[in-house]
Image 1 (cartoon, rainbow, N blue to C red):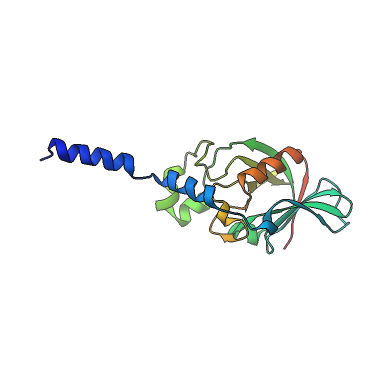
Image 2 (image 1 turned 45 degrees about the vertical axis):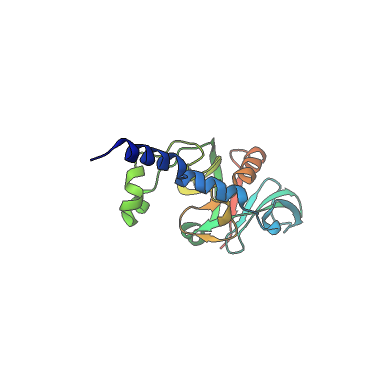
Length: 189
């Protein structure tokens, strides 16, 4: 039987216990990104034209070629899929606070974790794609690889369990403004 005191203690505990989202936000706020993963201009291979995005998954960097021999470098986190895929694509579309839907393979691989999201997760602070997404297509077809933000900035510079090429939300917002639809993206092997 629930008495008034038990009910009040239970309600107080609910309000006092931080939610998972609150704990994640606190962790993200307290996180300090290694300076080598902060955006910076670097010397870069002159073979790529200005405006080209070059992703180096093994070293966890994304380069936006600014001019011949110079690129803006960002740190990235790379998922298993991003480590396996390489080649040339183009940014076919971009989205602010995009909806995220797990792929059929993700649901098949881990239905307990992903099946509940089969209809998608609307854009927002808890969305795995973060603040922005650039959708990579090859020959007019979706590759299902994305350059996107993350609400888990501590994954930058690491191999992460899922996802493609992830950046901090702040950095992907910057990239989003600099890269137009139609830009070439080269993912190194």
